[in-house]
Image (cartoon, rainbow, N blue to C red; front, side, top):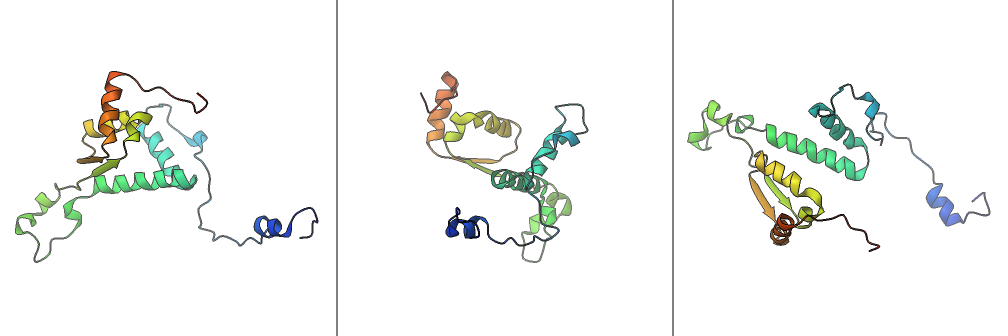
Length: 159
């Protein structure tokens, strides 16, 4: 290392040579709320824009963005997207019928999602028939029952 105050192992790890990224490689950045054109906070396109921007926000947000894209793909899919071929079920040959058959969406979550504030999100998804099958751990039942009797409060590890 050129600087005697920086250990060489640190210098090589932190001050290593960088390589140029391809021009089309996404830059990590958050959502620019100043670009929102709608005056209504309830406009669903605002939420769509935020979700889309998460693809370039960082690891966790990027995975939320990827999940949102996958959900859109599942909800859009119809059996008519897959051509009928010889050997397939003859009763599913009708293109009109195939256009009405959609993906069956399984929703899986761990029990802690109920007590950590996600119960309302799950309730919304079920009420609005956005999922077909729910898979959860056994703890979800007791936490849901507890939440029906009394609210769960925000905690602090310092308590």
